[in-house]
Image (cartoon, rainbow, N blue to C red):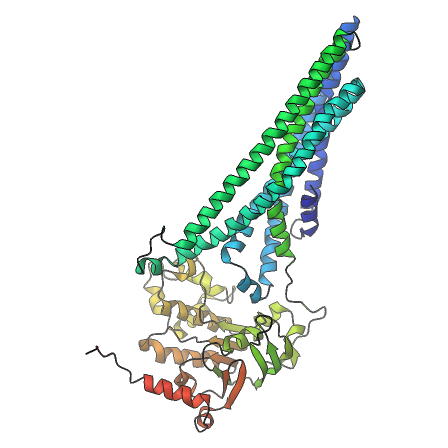
Length: 585
């Protein structure tokens, strides 16, 4: 239960503030229901005493019947209230928790995603959250109710006969010690199983996404070693969990049954010796059976909660991941020039990704970033968008450190076209409106015409309302890239970041796209990554990067006169333009 209340403290109920209150109220209703559920046993005890004592009459029967009817009615009302508050409050808290996790993920640095596998995060957002939801909506209330009934019946057993009561609880105490000892082993294997399940999800997801490569190289599903190994490990851990948990549950039940038989034998012995009345004997047998049943059910519920403990831990660990800090008093720039001041960044400890990067970019100019793969070009773009925080130095927009701006305000000022832009499994119109939800249809069409998208969109079965599949899978690479450019044009942000934005554009559309790009960047501050140097020859400024450092800076005409990396890259690309495939002799 401490896991549940610990997670409750982490959940912010901003959307529906009374969700947590309703959940707590459902626990109170469940306890009240359990209190009324013990009233019939009190009625039974009174009736038996009266019958064996010879003073049972109609008046007593009416009073006991009315008491029983009232308790059953109140028990029903408490049960309904507990279910309504539990389900509404529990599901509401889970909705708040899902939104909280989604908001948290949106503010985590990209380095977090580089360390975590997609399948692992998917497992947290689906399976682990379902475990927590079941714990909130079902297990917590049921466990509180059964423990309450067990506690009350145990107290009644002690009241009826304290010696037999202690004997009843002795077997339960031994069973709980066994349960405690086995719980650590079950928890350890359960954690390993949940971790392995997340790894298996990652392997299966990787297998599905890479199925074209696997088939192209003739690798069957059984021959895909990672998937096979992950499934075998998951199978082995699942069997171990079931065996150990099953043995523990059976062992606990057997101990309770043995305890009940010992209590039964001792009770009959006392009755035969005249030390225990007939009414007390019957009542004790009924109550002890109820007590053992409630303890057995409570143990099963606690075992299930213990199995879900890893899910609680994974969600709590995700929520405890440090987000990029937000300023207490945000600043707002009144212009959009960019300045990098001695920026350093390390993607991994001990590895310098960027070292002392300094440059400035004015509005209305294009700054091109060129260099070999791994030089740090994309990292500069990511740092400007604050996907990561710098390790040293600072980045200014309009003279304001981007760490002093709210992230939403920063990103509102930036339009990004990444090298691998993602499109959602939705209509083309919805994908475009991500940039500007309230754009008019005329503005949307103007953006697609500028990016040479309109014609191929209109050729689709439902035009702008065509659903394009996960990741835009129904479109070609060039079409996806042009839609990404159209999305940036529609946003009309003062800063534009282009990460090899024309890489997937065919030659027939390249001229039109370059015209569209000219319209996109007019009057804006532009950072553009390019591997094809002839596409940035007209840039106002070119930064040549190598191994995380600026090794050249200037316009094309200046750099081409120098004996540096830029010249070597230019010559390599010029030579490759005349390359022809020749068949071996």
